[in-house]
Amino acid sequence: MSVEIPPVNAWLGLPVIVHSMQEVANHDEVWPRYLALNPLQRENFRVALSMDIVVPFFRVLEVSRPVVVVPPVAPVPVVPMPESIVPFQTAADDFLGWLTRQATLVRDNGGLRFVYGDAFRLSADTVSVPIVIQRNGVEVAGTRFVFHYHPSASGPSVGHGYASEAHFKPYDSAPKYIRVEHHQCNGGVLAAPYAAAKAKARAFG
Image (tube, rainbow, N blue to C red; front, side):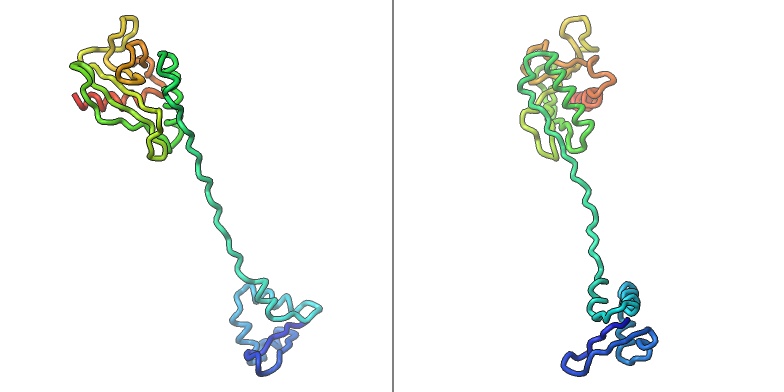
């Protein structure tokens, strides 16, 4: 039931063995060293006094060293890779499926976004807006497509040939039948990119 306190100077003096807190408080050399302990070390010191062995003073300090708490690191979300448009450019349904899947990815993942390029006049009555998908701020190869706006046309091409005011196409010169129309973008994941692309095109004129 004691703690062995080494001398302040290792070359001078002898260790001091104390058996109770009263001895600690009455000892001119030990008391200041006890007061210098942190709360955990003081608790260990008192526990050591109650043990049936002589506890070296360094053990009181050693077991009370602050534990370094490493804050948990939040997992970095994995941003999915969009699909290439290349296999989906030859049929209207394939293009619609590809565009819907990519719009869903963009909606659900903060690291993805549609980027709308500068609009330009493709013909007398066609304004084209190039669009690409960026992943973590970098363009994803194989994701370029376009939005065409025809100022003189009105409404979607539902049941009346190919005329329509605006639509997505896989590329500027794609056949008229390979495109995604206005009515296919209402109320779904394509509504937001359709509205953004149309605003870009109408701002051009």
